[in-house]
Amino acid sequence: MPRNQKTLFDTQREEALSRQAPLAARMRPRTLDEFVGQDHIVGEGKLLRRAISNDALFSMILWGPPGSGKTTLARIIADTTHAHFEQLSAVSAGVADLRRVVKEAQDRLGMFQQRTIVFIDEIHRFNKAQQDAILPYVEDGTIILIGATTENPSFEVNPALRSRARVFVLESLTDEQIGVIVDRALTDAERGLGDLNVLLAADARGYLINMSNGDARTALNALEAAALAKSPGIGGKRLITVDDIRDALQTRAVRYDKNGELHYDAISALHKSVRDGDPDAALYWLGRMLDGGEDPLYIARRVVRMAIEDIGLADPHALPLTIAAQQAVHFLGQPEGDLALAQAVVYLAQAPKSNAVYTAYAAALKDVAETRNEPVPLHLRNAPTALMKGLGYGRGYKYAHDYEDAQVEQEHFPPNLRGRRYYEPTGRGFEATVRERLAWRDARSSNTPTKGGAHQEELTRSAPGWSDVSSDVDPQALAGEEPQIPAEDAAETPRISRPPSRRRSKE
Image (cartoon, rainbow, N blue to C red):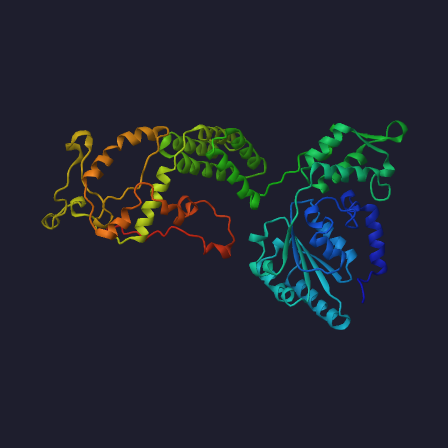
């Protein structure tokens, strides 16, 4: 069975690259025994390792952060398999390239009975049409697809293509694993820096490992830059210090993508830290997002939402304070506006919490959507004309200011919702005062008979609290949170049905 054929030019190019390529490329492991990390998928006895060793490969998607070994695994497969190996980059390849590769794979399979493995780097950059173009040939086995991506395949890879491939999740390398890779590069005279007499100070080694943030490529590139820029000293030794590494790195390898999964994960962590009353963690996640280049106005909008959803009337000052923070961010910009956000998240974290209004509004919307929209009771209607007065509009209405404490026993719901209770204030913060102010509702409701028989009992069984609301209402739809769900799953997610407006037209 024919293997991948190399021409003289291929050999010369590989030899030149072995001398001139960056250290990270030269030190790329050539076998699974050299591969560092990801023991959960390529350790002894694991499925992927057995598939590579036995040349019994299947379509797969390798998902992991930069520098975790996705491309390295693909190259190990290329050197191990008897199948023909084709590599494409989704950054530059198009549908025409895919069709060419598929046609060659069909011919190769027919003439030589040789399989073709197609490795697509950055597969998340392919649009739907490009992914659909390769789908039939993955399904019928014409090609074996290996896709590499830093983005969550749930959102970036078509469901049909994803269902025909196994997804392997690669993790960031640990500090110990980065240390092994760095030490190997320092001593390897053939592919590494062994012939440069490089000495890496202990504190510089620790600094390099820490600042690489689990990215082997970042660590090796910084190490090479520091070594090449360092002049030999006594005995021809090149001593690399912390300052040398700092100069080579410039900044820490930042793991954040404001358009990817980390965007959602980080804002979720910030929101939950605030909700749980942890100002320190809230400041950390705020800093992570801003340091990663997140739009501060996006964060400001979400902070306002936190004040509405999780603080509510337990602290009425929370909402205006977050609005002020948003205005400060808009007016001052960065970095001054970042402090306004920091002040806001600390205030929200320490504030008393209540979602009473949030859940009450959800319950009200459920009734709007799922019960008959009865007319407004006559006594609550305005009567600007004689005809309307004659029809009974406004008749029997009790003017609250004519009663003690402006509290009047009067029904405001339509008949089918009479006695409904949505809002139940907590005993926290200002809502304790609100609870006292609304205590008259309990006395009124105990003296007010309900009507409607079994149907009305079903409607009013939930007051107070209404446990069914939380199971049917999607809080994200209510509060406007961007749901991080694949498009094909969105239709299955329960939503609040908002009825069309019935405002009287003004003619």
